[in-house]
Amino acid sequence: MSPCLCCLLMLTSIISPLGAQDLNRVIFLPGTFQNVSVSANETILAVANRIPPEVAFITVQFHTQQRNVTLSYGTTPVPGLSSTALDTGILSALLPGQAAFTLFLFSADGGPVAGIGVILPFSGTDPMPGACNTNFTLNADPNIHLHYNLYQTTISFAPANLGHERGSAPPSCDTPTGVGTRWRLQYDIYQYFLPETDLSECSLFRGLQAVADVDGVTENAKLILTLSSRDVRMAIFNSIPGQGVIYSVVVRDPVLNTSASYVPVHTYACTFNSKMDSCQTLGQISTKLLFTLAGLAGVFVCFFGHRFFKCELFCMGFSFTAFFFFVLVTRTTGLDYDIRLAVSAVIGVVGGVLLVMSWWRFGSVMACVVVVGLMLGFLVASTVLFTPLGYSDVLRRSDAVFWVTFCSIMIVVPLFFVRWPREGNIITCGVIGAYAVILAVNAYVYTSLSYITLNILKRLLNDNFNAAFTDVPFQTIDYVMITAWVVLGVSGVVLQLYRERSRPFFPPSPYLMWLQERERRKTNVLDPSHHFQSLPNRFMSRARQLTRRMESAGEHTPLLL
Image (cartoon, rainbow, N blue to C red; front, side, top):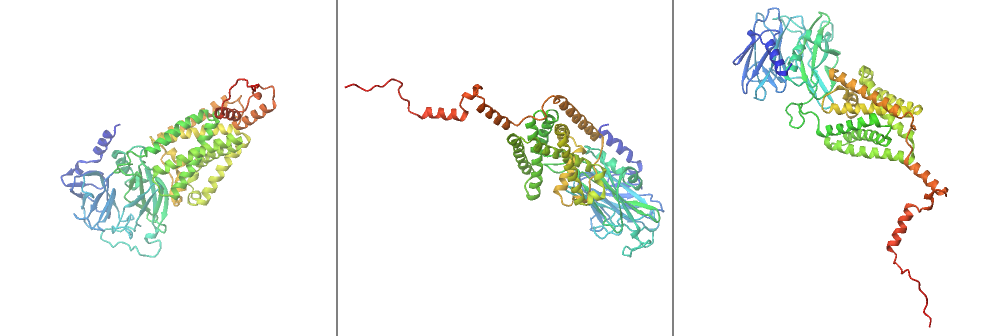
């Protein structure tokens, strides 16, 4: 189904005849989503009708994808009585006999904006989200406040209060802890992933409708953690640029067995308004170029790495050195990303050449294979910690435990290479080469498998990454990429094992072969090459011939007197 048709069907389903937009006035019905368009410099009067008498308070929420909107009690925004964001909402307690409610909606920057809104009703026994706010501008703030950077996304929210009926005084927020106070409330934080690579409004609005209320959140989203009222009301997640994520919070009253939802908030960990690196053009050209070359090299290493041993060593040395120096340069300098990538690539070339030259000069296959084994150990350790095992609180919160576990797995893997060096080297070629192809695909089509190693890189670069939840979506494209990784890796390993079964385990060192050949020429007088001068002697002899004065070849005899 095309995105346009999908949006048309969605908007048709959410707009009821009674909730149509009429000039500068929009009528909402409780629990019914309404499509709203705000023209440039226009103010919309949002009216909620037919509010049942058993409803004690309501939350009004409005969502857009790219432009901020402002919800306000008046035509002029006033701090404490208005809220501005992509996902914004206002909580209002109702008076006895009140059956209607009005708010004003307008674009924050004066430009045209479109989105969806909904009014959710709650009873007097439901907790009031954000009613005990002390940190944000609204007096009662039901919003989730989100901030992100390249590494992590942080959400925070105001504490809730116990509910109360219309006309009664709300419970005090400044009370000591006790069962009869707000300190008994609990907060469940949920995460909902939008379809991968789908940046359309249709997908976002459909996701927001799925998690707007308590029933939708608990049914469709994933519970990440539960906080008590004594905990800091904040959670940190792994940033996934280009991947849409919706975060929701449900506050629960375990005594009355009631609950209420905060206004859900969404992020793509990128901006739609950037001219250089927006959500639509995510990914630097330099990154795409580097990983495209890495993918081509990965195909070669996967199927021919052991046969062309020098090329394999160069690729492994390049990867190992470039990764290490990228971390070092990023942590110690403030250079631009492209410059850091270029410097790391140059140092990687040097590292690859040094690894090849060490094998060429000293002929120590085992030392080179250990470096190759560390590369496989790095990928195995990253994969193990990418599984739910890595999400455990012990590994996630403690850097010491995490890095000890990671290094232990990374070091154990090369030990198997001591007993089976050729087989281990071929397996490394297949697995590492196939994963390089996956990374090359990720430069153009998003796949969560890239976060196997990217999470490790983020943890190395960010000191506070241990507080982040590193969940990533696992959808159809990821299963396709896993299949491609397995097929490429197994095919490469089987092909190389079959082709190398009758060959020597490893090719001999060229330098050692040259030394043996020189010794053979010195001692074997029957070898015709024994009677030829060495290349340096032949060169010096020819140079002397070119610089010495030529004498006549005739015979000279003394004159007889």
